[in-house]
Image: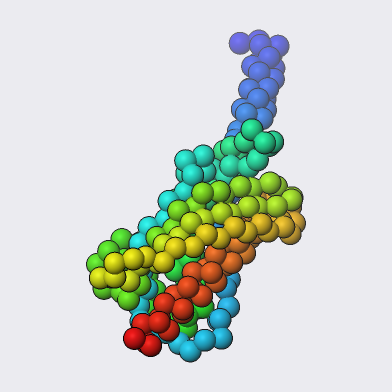
Length: 201
């Protein structure tokens, strides 16, 4: 092989390596929701609570972050993702918040919720979970509170809008965590009211 041929192959190798490096995908980043609610000031609850299920809109029921690009358009970010299925993440965050608000460790979510005998069962239907990077998040949910054996359930609707404090997807996750803390406070307040009624009977 001539010297010119060897140099040609060397340059080709460098060019190929540079092309492959340019085509490499950026690393994915993973985020989670956080339980940030504080105690509600009431006496510690002496009863157990189960977060039975959480449903979310099909639009956001995916690993990737879904962000609003306009009234009728969304963007799906392949490289910024939830660390766990979003519905399960919301359920565990609500349970953790309720545990703090009610002052009890006896709040459970996930598969084990079906195997316990709590005083109250919570079902949540998230109807809106919107993210606008650098601006706001909007969270709307309808929830039901059931006492096993009772004929009727107590229902409520929570709608929260939180400003995004900062840039990037971590700021979006933090804003959704604050919104979930607000929903948790609404549910905890309803549980307190029901518990007071039961005690008075």
